[in-house]
Image 1: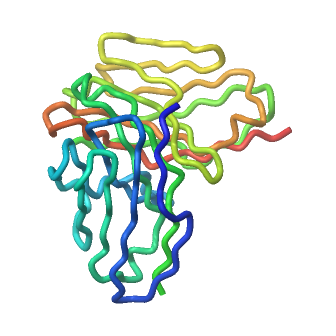
Image 2: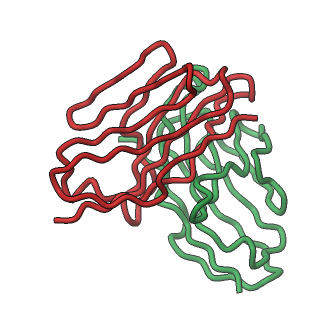
Length: 115
Length: 114
């Protein structure tokens, strides 16, 4: 079974703090994604990576950065957390074999509250 | 870019009845349409998908239909059961937008009433 794990299920941070969200997958997938999930807005792509040290901006990258130093690990960084970044963050991974039509496997999510 | 609209946002049905969730997309080049189910406390999980060269696909109690002309696709769940209660997301894959970026709909919270 594919397993995508996220370092925390719940996080509470203060405005201005630097926040690290970690994601690890165990299926040797090339692609990894970070989404945020907000009620009524669905899943919005923040960043994705299709290889080690490679990254591409998604639809809402402002205020975020990412790091992929190893194939299995993809980190999301909030440089200076703000209250409007309070959200559910979902990590996903997929293979690159089918040119975009592969299943994305999601982690359980990290619910972040910024006070 | 691609835009996916999903309706309704909430849906409540009696156990045993059918449920239908509809999505429309804007980019006629989109060629892959997956549906994900998110149970409470979990990440979304793929339940069924359809490619643009197919009009309908079934898997036991769930089916997806695609109308390329009208640019809409729908999820049908028959004989609903309590375990079908979840949030469902549709998505579209527009190849022109780059590598493997799905565009998701807003989600539908489905509640099955016993």
